[in-house]
Structure formats: structure tokens, C-alpha cells
Image (cartoon, rainbow, N blue to C red; front, side, top):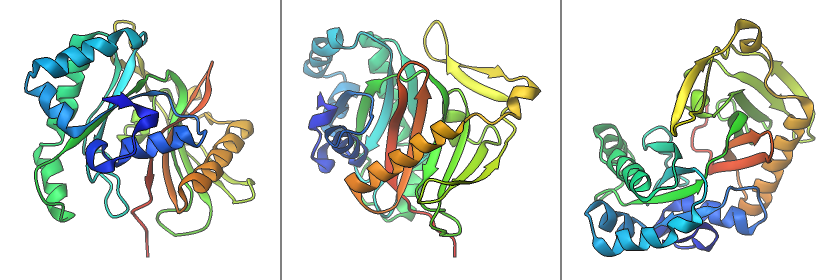
Length: 271
């Protein structure tokens, strides 16, 4: 268990943790947190007293709610994306019992029939080794995904899908998101409103809740030109740090601005 910015070893902490650590070191706007190695997670879920004591040791540093995300070894590699396979537990209260429960949920998600079937299809051998990322929770006003190149057509334009609230409504396909296309010069060439009649937000007691959205707001674009430019620049920065084509999850927070939540290589391409 180490600060996220110190995660270098993908075989121990998983590719997601290592990529986010690299992003922090590269000056990208990633919420800070911790990386939990797959072996340490195994100890915790098996009630190892030492691992639990170590978690209690960092508890004073967790003064705000956190997001607990999978970072399995082999996840989000150049050849495979486990997007949607592994659990993310949002808005976890900064208490040891709550964090342990969230870690157990994420660990178990790596062993579902769906996740194991995906591993077999991708030719990933061995038992799942689930590292985990614990990050400050971002209370987003709008969030979504960005592809630095169109993942279906292969066109050299940025594709952005966005909705109100937390980005899980986009990732899980719960709404029809707004869609934007932006050239590599930063010019917006498409603004297509979706129908975002549902949003997910933080609940006052911890966790999240779904809220219905009025029709006029559901059909209103959730990003303005300044935000689209900020996303374009984030894509440029990720290309400088990582190279290659980017599949990003991001969020705008009213107080904190734009955050990069996850990054993986684009692994899906149309003909």
C-alpha cells in the first residue's frame, strides 16, 4: 500500500494504478490517493490482521470520501479493456470498515462469471490479481469519456460523450449522452444533445443516488466551449505523457475544475 504517485510496478499494482501514478508525476489533474497491491488486497480480504492494521494506519489521511476502483493486473492493457467488468465503489466514507467493504466488493467483481469469461476470451491466464486504487471522490457536475481518436471510424478527431453528475451514467449506458467531436486543432465540429433524464450524484449519507432530470435540462448540452477546450488540452497532455491513442474518463467539479479519473489505451476500432 503506497501513495498513488509512487506506483511503478504494474505486476504488483495493476496497470491502472501505474498509469494514474504516471499521470500525477506528469502533472496531469488526477485526484490523489493510494495504490493497493494485489497481494495486499488478498491479505485484507482474507482477514490478515497486519493488513488491517496498516489500513488503520493511513485512515487519518483519508479525511474525505473516496472512490475505490479496480486496478487488476492485466486490466486496461494495450490488448484488453476490462471497462464495465470490474466494480467501482463511489463515495465511500473515510472509515476503515467502509473501505474494507468496498475493497471486498471490488475484489469479488474480478471473480464474477462475466469477468472470468472476459479473461478467457482475451487469453489472460491464471487467477485474477486485483490491485485497487483509492482516490479522493470527485463530486462532478458533469462527467463522461473522451477518445482521442474516433474508436469506431478511426477518424483523427476527439470524441467526447458527457452527461450531468457522475460519469457512471455514461459508462453504464443509463442515458443517451451529449456527443461532441473536436478536431486536433481544438475546433468543435459537432454538438449533438443527448437525452440525459437521469443523473447519479453523491448521497448525503454516503454512496450515490439516482435522480430524475427535468426534460428541459435533459436535452440541454452539459458542456460549454471552455470545457470542451479544457478536455481537448487534457487529451493533448495525455498524449504527451503516454503516447498513442487515449480512452479517458474525466469529471468537472464546480470547485476543483477538470479531473482525469481513468486512462487506458483505445482497444476498440471499427473497420
